[in-house]
Length: 253
Image (cartoon, rainbow, N blue to C red; front, side, top):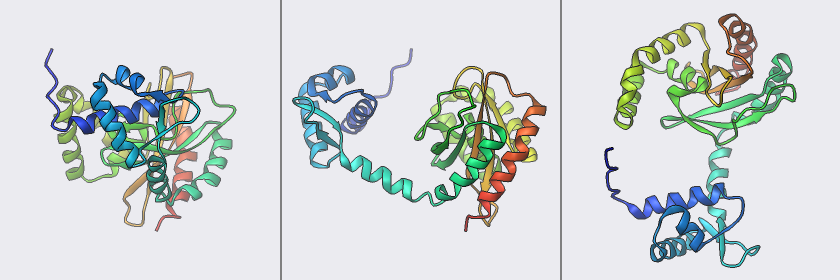
């Protein structure tokens, strides 16, 4: 097994581990608990937490003695990024109609760097439950939403994207031919389909949202639970999906 390259910024790595841990924890954690879970030395953890406290990235939690939770600065940053997604207010009424048409939960996803991020979701009570949530992040080429955006980007963008992904995961080369075929089919059909994207027996279908320059700036997706989505069913769902995406596209400057 190849050893992981030693970090050039261990304090940054430790900071991110602490944030990830506190964000997922069911209750505020003490310094010793944080260090035990992350493997960070107590002395280093103490220094890093004090710096994070100064920057309001973590906060002392009064509900438990000498414990920490996510700080207000994280919420401020997240709120700023969220409010920049000016498509979200238009998404809700259109997604409500689409949800009632196809009886599936509907998500709005946007590309951020080389990832696709779920920024909003409208739940359907008639749709089976599956593990997708606001804030979920996936590589572009592994999700229906990401594929439908990637397929609309230039060949130069795609080449740059996959060059970076291959550096992180060289084994991706084995799947490149299939991925390229998927992107070509997505571009031709106007929608993308993936299977087992967010859990077993869950298919996702997504269509791109375009700006006035015909650039994909977001995607609208639906989760189909309980069966593999066959081509005919995908075409049936896509009619409503494409119409909803066009309505959202018309509201983007």
